[in-house]
Image 1 (tube, helix red, strand yellow):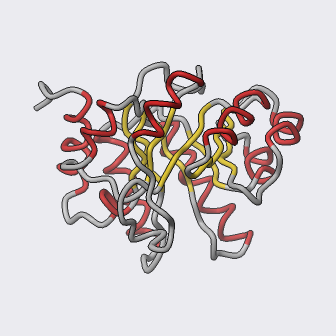
Image 2 (cartoon, helix red, strand yellow):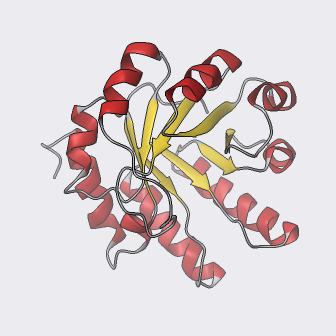
Image 3 (cartoon, rainbow, N blue to C red):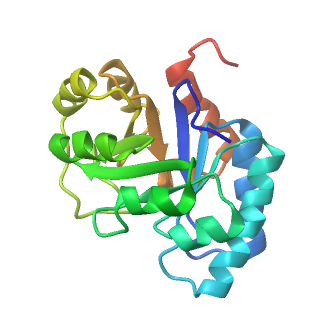
Length: 211
C-alpha cells in the first residue's frame, strides 16, 4: 500500500504492559474504526517476538486496508515486506533505507528541525514528523514544538507533515488548522477504555460531520 493522499489519524502501537492477545484485540478494534496509517513500535521485545507481532499486525492491517509501517527496523520491514518504515535521528539513513526497501513508505522524525525535514524530503522521505507538540506520556522529556513550525514547513515542503506528541481531540484541531496533514497518536487511543469512540473523536477533527 502507498502513502495515503489525504490526511488523517496515524496510530502508533503501544504494546507495553499488555498480553499479546489483548494487544491484538485492541489493535483490531482501532483498525476496524478506520485509521489512515498504523505503525508498529516496539523498543523492548526480542527479535523473534517482534517479528511474530509484526506478522500478526501486518495481517490485521491488510484485512482493514491500512498501510503498515515498522518503526526503526529496516531489515524486519524488508523481511516481511511491510508497507514502509519510520526512521529516527539515530536510525539508518533515508537513502540507504530506500536502497534496501525500494518504493516503500519512508517516514522521518524531524523533531523541531525544519532544515532536517527539508534534507529528509530531498533524500526521498515519503513524509516527515514533527513533535512533541504537547506533553507526551510516551516521551515525557521531549522538548515541545510550536505550531509556527507547521506554518513555516508548509511553505518549504511538498511531502505530508505528521504532528506527534500528546495530541488529544481537544488540542489536535489547532494542529490541523496550521497545516498538519496527519495526527500521530499513541496513548490518546491505546490508553482509552473505548478505543472506537476515541478514534472517532480524532477523526471528527478532520471531518466534523462523522457520526
